[in-house]
Length: 115
Length: 116
Image (cartoon, rainbow over all chains, first blue to last red; front, top):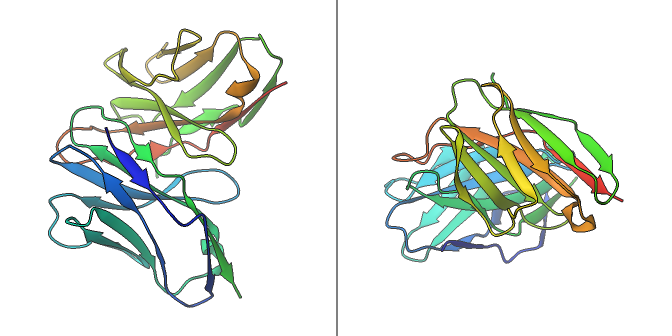
């Protein structure tokens, strides 16, 4: 079974500052993928970034980067130069590489960006 | 850019009624999913669907739920007799593949189901 733990129910960050959202995971799968999704108040789920368990380098997508520490089973999301539009819920998720394994989500972190 | 669409955006129904939530996955995708999110909680997997049959389902997906791909484009979730606790946001998702590289699952905008 897979499990995602997000220990920060809420975070505040000043506009233009960087923020790290924590995510730890547990799995018995030898190969897996880690994902971050953003959910604004409108409710849709927006894919942000993906990290494969065998990827040697940390994933980056624009202002988003994933700090992947495999030995610690952590996959923290770093948002640089925060913007007011970054205020949202952020969900960490994972799935195995086996066919059709569903995404398993954490409880999420609510990020509030302050002007 | 192709996207997953869902209708309706909001559905209000009385307890005991049947509801059908509709999704149109991205056209070249082969794998389809339904997830739900009770207000203020995390997203939970319900069911995955491939090659016109259920691949995997969670314990939430009991006999009250069913899925169908009736016409090659739509993907539906039916709840036969809704309960108050079925009130949630229901997300449809699709992906090109699931093995090998962990392909991204593209989510639709969701249908908010309110059972009164």
